Image 1 (tube, helix red, strand yellow):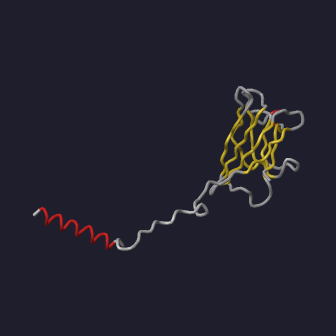
Image 2: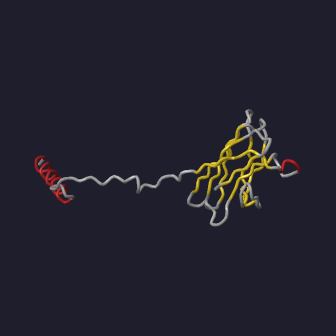
Image 3: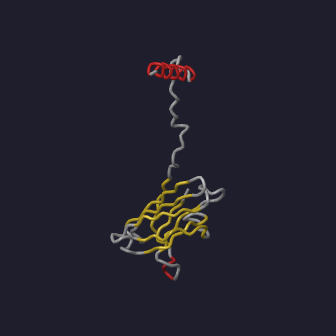
Length: 155
């Protein structure tokens, strides 16, 4: 009885192999090519320029996604533990325009460095016109706090 079961099991394996193409040379599935694989969007970097008399400087990294845009502002040389309002404006640092999007506050650490990310639900680049980022002098838009501290064109 045991040899009959072994024979039936062997026959089942052979038939299954033949049904799956076991008689032909095996071929492997093609590996996905890098061109067909989705890759994360690459960011575009822009300089964040200080206003006259300001010693801080930084960069803006813009990363366009499928449904929005991430703006990362990195600054050094700020006053330690200071806080600053930031926005995206329409226009450019030389031809200033109105506020388009609020960004997260820029908060400096104890050494005067900040790294702040914000995500907006608009695609970059804008369909018309230009954007620029402003970091203001203080934590609100009152008096001298509203002055531009740093400005960077996103074009």
